[in-house]
Length: 296
Image (cartoon, rainbow, N blue to C red; front, side, top):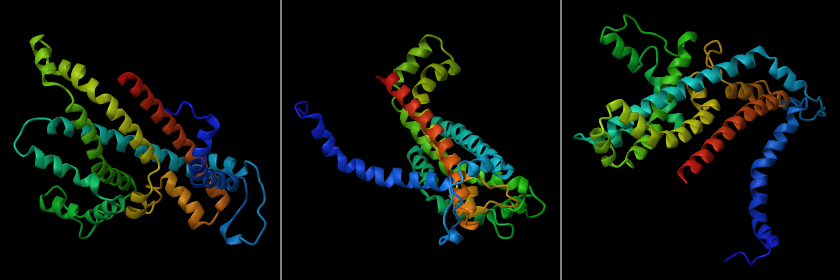
C-alpha cells in the first residue's frame, strides 16, 4: 500500500524519530568519547581542557588495577551466567513435570526475578551480616559452622557471595524461557521416540535440547551483556571491597569519575567497557539472526 510513496517522503516522516534517537543515544556517547581524549577534571571546570590524544587509553590499558577489574568482571560474568543457565534449565525441566502444586511452584519461582536489583542486594546484605544475618544463624544452629563469619568482609569469599545473590535473582528468567520452549513440544514426539527405542538421554538431546537451545541462547547472551556491566549489586553490597576484591570494571569507572573526579581518564575507562559490551551485543545480534533463519 505504501509502495507508491516517494522514498524521500518516508525519510521525512522518519526524521523526527531519528533526531530524537540521535539526541538521546549518540550525543552522550560522542560527549564521552571527546572527554576521553582530554585531561578534563571535574574539580577544574574553570580551567581550559587540553586535547591529549590517546594518552588516557594507553594509561588505562596498561593500568594493572583496571586489568584486574576486567579479569574480575569476566570471572563474575562467566560463573554467574553459567550457574544461572544450569540451574534455570534444571528448574524448567522440573516445572515441566506433572505434580501437585506445580502452578504454585511456578508462581513462587518468579519472585526472585520480580525483585528490583537494589532490593535484592539489600536483602542479601542483611542475610550475610556478620552479627545478626540469617545465614550465620542458620549455619551455627545446625552445627555446620562453629562461629559467625564475615561473608562480605573476607577478600577470598566476598565476590562468590555476590555471585550467589546475583544467580538467585536471575536464574528464574532462564527457567521461564526454557519452560516456555518446553511447553511447545508435542507429547507425541516423546511417545514416538520411546516406540523407536530411544533412551532418556537420546530423548533429551534430540527433542528437549533442540527445542530450548535457541531461546535459552538468546537470553544467555543478553544476560552476559548485563552481567559484564554489573554495578548496582556491587555498589549496595560491598562498594568494591574488601581490598578491591569485588571491584568490577563498571565500579572502577564510577570511582574514577565520581570519587577521584578525573573526567577524562574516567571517560576512557568507560569507552573501553562500552567497546567490550558492543562486541557482546554484536554476538547477541548474530545469535538472534541465526535463530530467526533457523526458525524460518
